[in-house]
Image (cartoon, rainbow, N blue to C red):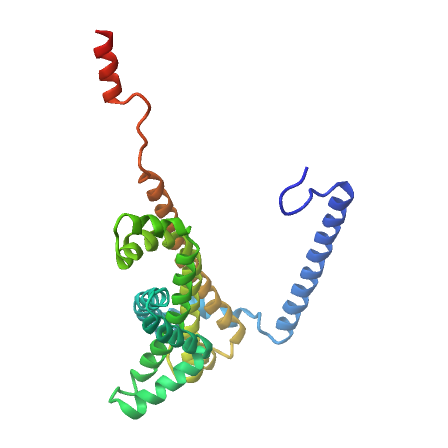
Amino acid sequence: MSSVLYDTPGPRAKRRNLLFTIGFLAVLALVAWWVLAALNDKNQLAADKWSPFVTDSRVWTTYLLPGLTETLKAAGLAILIALPLGALLGIGRLSDHRWVRVPVGAVVEFFRAIPVLLLMVFANALYREFTTVSSDFRPLYAVVTGLVLYNASVIAEIVRAGVLSLPRGQGDAAEALGMRKGQTMMYVLLPQAVTVMLPALVSQLVVIVKDTALGGALLGFTELLSQNRQITANYGANTIATFTVIALIYIALNAIVTTLAGRLEKRLRQGKKSAAPAIPAQGGPAEVKSDAVSGA
């Protein structure tokens, strides 16, 4: 028996795959043992390196939670601005008017080609030279600006690809009903494309959350990852423990975003199924009435 992608493996292939799996797990276990042994030699697995995260609440209240708050603040502002801006740019790239489509396409390709860290650096310099933004808030403004410019361009391409992936008959049917281009996009194409775009959009939202760490690395933005320097300086150079805890926080945060998006996608799909128009069965009221008259 076979599937579309591959033939079902036979007994010999199954044994070979089992041996490969066992070999891979053995190599992985050896690598893990080597890493743990090296960490133990450097005294990074000692209890005093890890215990502050359990016994001392000041690690959380002074460093981790404030850093997480700044990360969420920057990511939230960037998402709130980048999503509608990216949708507008994506719709602009689909415009029938060349004077709209070409400039929007140039803007999207320009900002999509520049590394987000470089955009943050440029934004920070512009805020410093040409605005009166306080130095206390300038890193936040620069991080949000860089994230918005880059991710709005990426989201624009996601929107454009999602709309173009729909069957062409959707737009033709809307035009046949007399709907204008804007109405077709707003009421017919975009609602259907949301479900198609959602996995890519969720991936981009996760990227936004993680990219806030770039501001802490270069601009002095006090986000979550940047707090490792303060923690390791005050709690005995527990670098590995600090990075591990911060990584777990990022994993939990992104897992929450992914779970919420999965529930939203499921609800959207269920809503589309429930909103499907019911086709009347053969022998409707008019036919039943005529049969009754003829029988009479």
